[in-house]
Image (cartoon, rainbow, N blue to C red; front, top):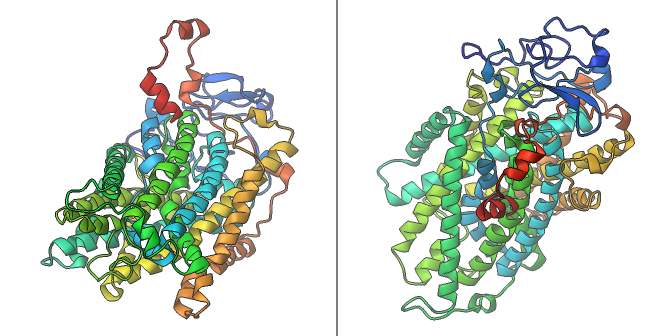
Length: 600
């Protein structure tokens, strides 16, 4: 894309999303009926694709086969067209959305492992521990972890085949109904502006502990402009920063696990061995099943973001390789990060510790902080706060990125105001970034409610929204699988096959429906009107958006035989440049470390 041009998803016309690109090559069968005056001598790859069909590919890896609107189905939307003069850097830009493909495999892998670890896990887990006890915490992390793993299997199958703009929100339009995509997209955006607001809340609370000379709104404004400036640098800067921040978070979490083992075993000087003392007093359970149900809501917020690699796949250089690796590493994130945290929080911090619930306006205590204080290391509290600060930097950065890309793709599919679909010549969605970051101002509600109460409000909103989004992903996967079979394809043709399909997809759908309904049950007795509305308001909102969009734009539920399974499939640059068998044999095997990382 020329550097003096910008991407405008509404400026182009033509028959399809690629008809204005100089390297566009029509399908041989369509060359007479669909002449293309823009066609140039073929410079890309033409051959049989993985499904045995003749297709035209250009060097950036997208299937350029012409398909009319009738082939796509009567309700398929036109994808945005990237203006281009044929310059060589077009292959770095995604022609669907205008964003730049600047994320590497290692960036996506580290995002899958630790990208969204933030105040939810480090501070919010304290509220879950206090309301449910250590046993409920393990059950909550375990159950939601199984559901999250099921969702990631579905996403791996979908996004490896269709790494197009909009991720699963775009796939909702392709496989279900444009109205369904609109409702899903807005609910997903709600998750991220709620998560972002919570992270700003924690950031300002930490600095208010360290100094009272600057008001909390002052800290908010400082961080708001810092994150805005960083996001405008581009996706490469985001990916590199996330890689190192995520690595720092993993190291810090591992250090806490080591401390916990030493502390529990009596290795801390001056502190007795506590063993499983807190499982006896105050005990493993708080509030029985009511406590378990409450923990489910918290844990859904902690796990929110495991699906974000599907959003980042659009800006990944080689999603067909990177996405499956990231999907596999999600399992280790669940085991090491979440289950490890649940176990060690329950061992080192009592569920009745002061400060776990309803902290002051200045801060909400982390189980880490309480454990270190109980061990007699007062100076370590500042170290924990510094670690939480680092995780907040990373989590804020990720939240703005995911939220802005979500609203960007919604605007380009006309389910959000179209000005939000604009990107500059570097592929940076400036209006979408500004809007997402502005939503972080919701964090300033803690000036009147206190950090603890503000966190509780935000958790309820983002928790039910997570269940809605995850259930929708499972439903999209079911629709895709049925259409794939109905149109005569085999699952053996898929580049990534989810485990135990279709059982895992049905499990994900039913489990999320159950969790969405049960998560507000605790507000019924005694009845709390405010908490009840907070817990369930997004359920009717989802259907209001769905029905409203359907009535206004007169969309309908797609039949299996009219679902488009062809457009938007991607063949990566690396796949087009595979070495010959002879050259492959002459190459040395990958190093042990690289093989471990790839399979880890």
